[in-house]
Length: 279
Image 1 (cartoon, rainbow, N blue to C red):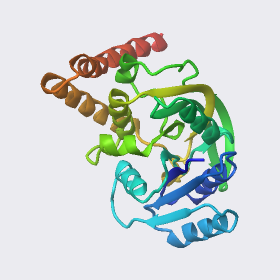
Image 2 (cartoon, rainbow, N blue to C red):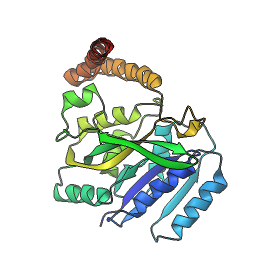
Image 3 (cartoon, rainbow, N blue to C red):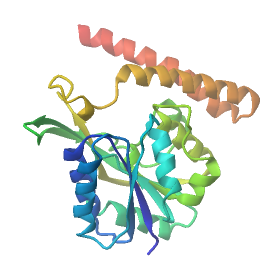
């Protein structure tokens, strides 16, 4: 059984972190290691949580405390650099997996040697925090039509969540990991580079769960919120402009051009929807 390195990023969200680690511990695939990268201040709390889980498992659990302002993709690169697995996957401290996630991903990769990565479909779970308790609100499919990764589709938008992607460590190394100069949407940019170099398979099952806190910001629990949409849009434009320049000099021209043009198409579609919904 090839080892899978699970890189977990956390920052001052112990309630969610416990749930994420439990999700790993409950996997039917047993040959995994955890590399936990903590960029928060409550070190004692993190140490206590991970000590508990270490006592429940013989698997390796590596804990890194980072006292710096590294953005999320730099934390991923740091975590991967300390890992030893043949495969790599990511699990943010607020997300979870179905118990068969790792097993089914590794099985497909082992059965199809031409694949260097595999993704599953994802379920979006809306929740809230009440008195330090996680309360379910709603769930829905994110990408239930995903059957295959097409260039024009991934050029338009990110097709899958970070916690739904398992890939070979050597492929990560060859494309240079995640970029250090993009604090947001680095996963989408990484996925596009991966797609251009390697083949990605799809498991048409929702085995990954992406959790969203609905009212964490209003309740004052700032660390429990998801990332700002406004900041996403800023880096969306930045990435698309860079790909246009790359297409004009290095290529592949058509793919890079489609990445750029879809920025305008997406904006137009959003404008039309806003007009329709106002009526």
